[in-house]
Image 1 (cartoon, rainbow, N blue to C red):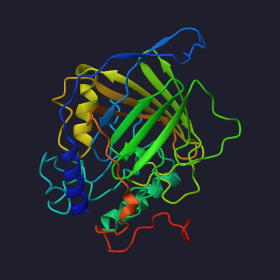
Image 2: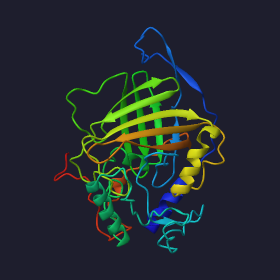
Image 3: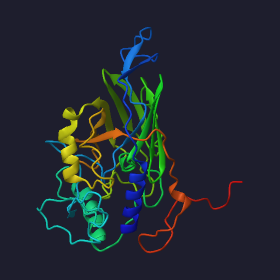
Image 4: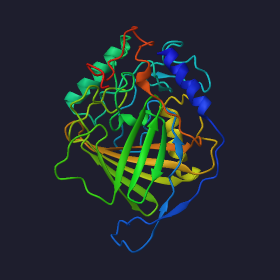
Length: 331
């Protein structure tokens, strides 16, 4: 796991580039949410590459129900790869520290979890304490479902009049397609990333996602194994914000998450892309909960990562990952 962390740190630092100026708005010929197709709509310009190098990834809300977080903590030592359980003793409970990426012990006492889901999270945490790196969509090279897909800390947003593409990369490459000003079909077939429809509300892109596939290996929404069901419903609200608007979220990010690429957030004074999430799943959670992810501009070119090129688990027991495969070649 330590070598995996060093590799991720190297990749994150290699991808860092100077931040260009960010445009404010673009004019789109697409139909506005009001339905007036004869009127051009001014929409915010999100089309570029954005970065959020943080593990896990959710920024807890300032108040109210929030995501499952890690009970195991380590010191935030920016730029020092020799941190965490593999190099330093973990901090005792209650002492200031950030999520220990080497020991993923989800807080199964979080009141958002129904009892059965709390037991699932607790079991995964016990495995991690025992030194077992359990399978998840990332380390097994499977498509990442909502909300696990945010582990890929780099996303390119491409806006079109009738759709939005979100291309995530690192350690894999996953693509979400959002239909604008449309509805979910009455007969919905579950899929890897779910069915996503969106619209603009002023300066905000709102995306509604349902129908995330559940009959798949590693059906979890985070690194702690938090499950989801067919009732998972995710609402994303994307907007461009200034530093003063997001500094609270940045501080919560620094307090909770391991910034494996260093703190690239606090010194940035251009535009940020802030994603505000509302999550509900009546099969898993006792209440809807919220979180944010705050992105800074990234490189001009998106690199492609293909996890399945090397299926060997160099970080655990030396076996091969359970990657998707065919029984015979298709050529």
